[in-house]
Image (cartoon, rainbow, N blue to C red; front, side):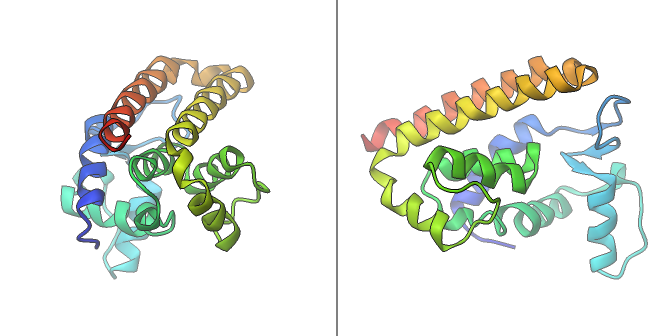
Length: 182
């Protein structure tokens, strides 16, 4: 687990949106608790040599471990400047790490291959001065993705308002994080 204060700050935002147990029939992830799917929790239990149990029983500590291991670390958020670290992390949790990287690459205008390697990280470093524009572009792309997803899969329309409300809150939180450094 990480002891990064930014990780802790990003978790605060995440837990505001990823609440208790849910098993909505239209949710492809099905049963979730604190934003962790049953499948993800089963993998977490197996990696620790434990028998699977209901995600309904997940502890906050286990959720934090999962977020650190499966989202924060693979997305290399320790190497991403605030508030983009929050934006990428939250996207990874909500849409998957592959989608989070692809949105980042599209915003950086580099080849979109879903690999967060030296080319993407180099482009990110080179565009550090343009962070507000990069965050804005990323969030706009995420909003378009939600709308396109609902257009392709209308059954997901039940989630659109919630996704867009979360995105609006993320944008406001990111703007607060950017403002003091301008």
